[in-house]
Image (cartoon, rainbow, N blue to C red; front, side):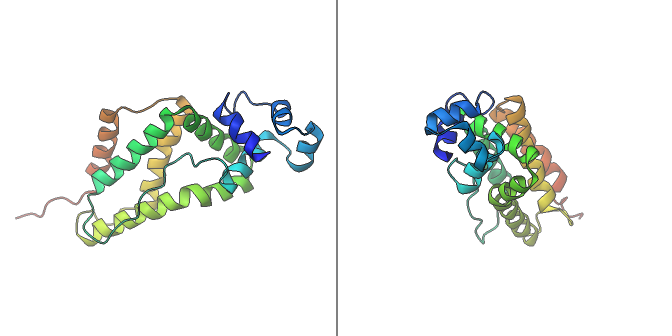
Length: 186
């Protein structure tokens, strides 16, 4: 069933998908599906949690110990996220992820742990490294920053908007303006 969900999301997309189509593709009855999953969102959620469907947000690379180039790291992640949304399957999976998270709190929590937690951890590492090098204002909330970046990508998925490179640079510039430490007074 989970493989049938992947094929359906990659094809017509989550919005157009029906339980009847899933049943036919998986060669099972609708009753069999409903015995195990109450909705198509539940099937999608299980496929995402199990890793049968790719994550809709790119996983960031591990942060090193050297002084970070925070602006470039954030821009690289946002650019990768935008590129993933340009792919039909990426946009379909992102929209479906939002739908299943909103419709099933338990699945939403599991998906949050699998997909969002690594991004939050990565941003927190970047912020801690940059702060250790004196590059940031005191009190920058890494989790809040990560949530803002994730929200930007979620909004882009909901609206079907793919941000241009110029727009992504503008977003990062605005973020950096708010968190970078002012130069020392002489």
